Image (cartoon, rainbow, N blue to C red; front, side):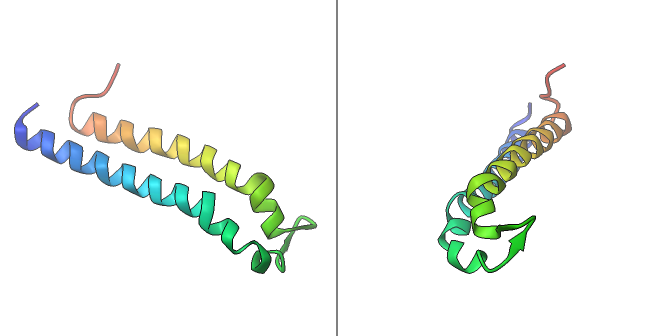
Length: 84
């Protein structure tokens, strides 16, 4: 891989990583800081704060995992370093 291409690859990978880290902090910590305010919203009979603590964050993490893998694979294919 050429040096310029390598820099572009790592810049895209780093940007994706920081985006995922930001989303992880949001769903792991920020949402739970507002649990009292979120409890006024009811989804499927459960307060939203309770739902996010019990299941919502876990669902978000699984979705983020698959989304990250797909985006990273796209970056790998774009720069010719994808696995077969």
